[in-house]
Amino acid sequence: METLKKIICKSFYALLALVMVSCGGEKRSVAIVVDQTTYGKIAAEVDAYVASVADENRTGVLVVDKWANPDSIKAVLFEMYQNNNLEGAVFIGDIPLPMVRD
Image 1 (spheres, rainbow, N blue to C red):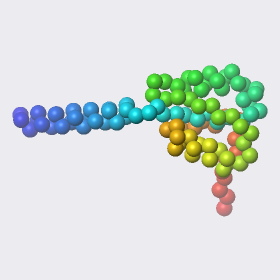
Image 2: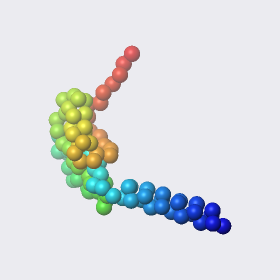
Image 3: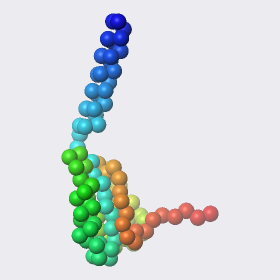
Image 4: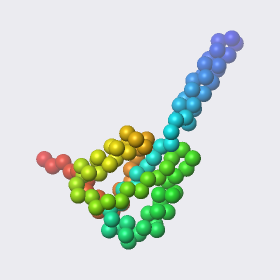
């Protein structure tokens, strides 16, 4: 019986530590990446989507630009990863993506 109490107690503390790590810290962010032309046509819908992504632990960040190549998107997302706790990105519209060909 004493061993069972120890196992339950250790499990509780491990779970508590996990919850504290996952709930603590800064807010996370999700980038919504849109090209200028598409955003100009559906701005209200994109803004509503950005707002719907946000909750108490996450914020939606709208990123609108005339994307020339995948490297420019990579630079913006990497900067957000380092400074804004970026955890994901959604691409809408004409966004250049890197392609690997044989």
